Image (cartoon, rainbow, N blue to C red; front, side):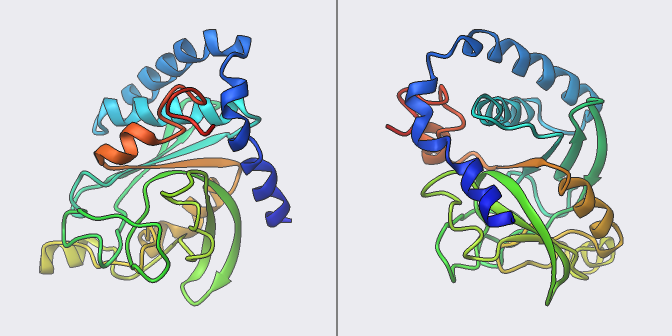
Length: 233
């Protein structure tokens, strides 16, 4: 079932340029800005600009058929020693989780520096993802992520980039080694919170992974005008 879901959710991408003129576009920015302000107030430790970009990307997905009820935001510009994952209930517009999250082994040490969409890179990926179902694998209970941005994260499923719990995500490790452990590219979280967080995100969610990468920021179809100059033609 998840495969059919992923295909349907990706089907809007080739239609971005056509949809840019839709009447809903006139009100989407205002709604996105209002939501961003509300979520930023609910999570004062988060960067307001990152939240604004996340809600902008979310509004683009919603314009093309998305009905996400949960938003996850990862700010990879922050060190792994800081809580840099926020999960919001979009219906009640409130914060549900604020957590530590690991990045890929080859993405950086304490700070993330490099990102990739390439299998075998052991790096994290940027951009917007949709939750694509849970399973139990070698890392236990996990949430598949379907990348929505060609060239940046659309090979996430192929790469098995999933949210899962990991013992190397802990405050003890932060105290002893000055950073979290690192994954093979997955946004891993604390084992104590993994199941609850995954079940929450599995309820129709959009996950936004941010880093101030100039190329991604200037070419992402979710961060431009959702189909115009920065979209897919």
